[in-house]
Length: 568
Image 1 (cartoon, rainbow, N blue to C red):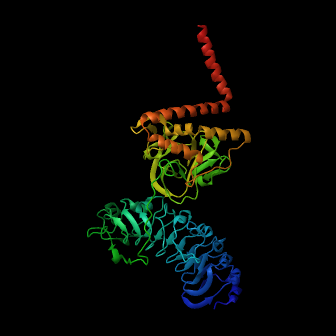
Image 2 (cartoon, rainbow, N blue to C red):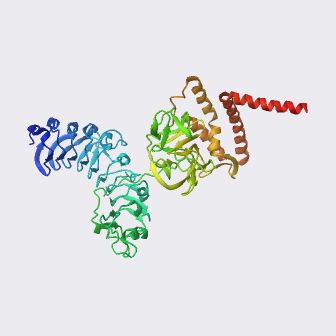
């Protein structure tokens, strides 16, 4: 039994290593932790230390850097966020081989206090179970939280039952990643997003599909001094190991140039003339303890112009006048955002605002030499190309020039595809917004890759871009919010969204327009012209209210010309 008198060592004890002592007992409350002000390393794995989950008393060890309670009785309770509060020096956590009680809904994953530890470099959670103690229901962990672990270098989850696809993007700091026998689905394209460069990746024993990308090697950091590990066996991958991957690490006719320590796959990837170092069970892979993985979900079809086409990701950066540079998911109604050069306009609405999205959406990640990081937006969203042309992001290529905040143009240096949870579409009066230093539109096309409106089943093109159409269709809503701003000095502070996060101001007009596109050219053309005419009148009213002097000047000029022509 660990005596409470251990606390008498106070600030003099820096290392407490009692691991692999199965008969060594310790029990709650761990009040003596509060006296160990100098303890930096606590290794109690494979002991009989007992607690109801991870106890809150842990946060008293404020100097703690290394923490191991794997395979102990610190289980059958929750991983408490309070236990990690204030442990800013913590670098290493091993809480594997334990059973924990689930806290909250399935999207809650790990406590925020653990995820956001500023110096955490190693997280080991192998062979962990999450259970609802009242229903005995087992929950699967998702790895979406890894996107926010800015300092993590090693993350091992072997044989912990996981759910979802590979986290994307992986943290830039990540070097060693292991998910052996975890049941994740998806494909290896996820590893090519972001800037992380792995040295070790044990991905064997999952449900990964597709082929091995030829340029996957560009996402790994290998050398003769630091050979890599890439184990892919036990998945459902198609095709051989690409020659590009082999050439990169085995050298082009250069023996052992950058050789892998381990490059493994199934027989289909590793033929007799492949560059694999091992095949299937030769790599040490064994059958996972969960042979009946839950099948991957069948993705629902993306709605035309809906969550899949109208939005920015939450990671997109926007300059505000009063609150500085903010992520898109931090913006609020009424925030004054940069829209063009030195012009700031209020966000009067969000066409889409879904910070708690259940499903991931696909975004294009666009970078230029001068951009602030990478702009992330859905493929159908509009960006301003050189010449101030609003075009769908999907039409852009590396080398194309886009309009920057300064009004100058800058060439695109990279375009990648990433997946994110959370979608946002802020609306400004001008319909523009500066995102990551790049001028973007508030609007998107609802016809894939189309810049101009095309009506009817026969495809009659109208000389109106979808950026212009968005401005027209938003006229009543924008006028209403402008009047609120003029009268009250602010726009509305609340909005109503549907279950997918789409504003009701957008949802119903969008449904009507999608119906219109399915009609004959005569019907769609007639209704389109009529609607545009009505909304055009609203536009005129909006201009009259906002710029009465300019409207009066135009009226005077037109009237004087008519009077002059009559006299002649």
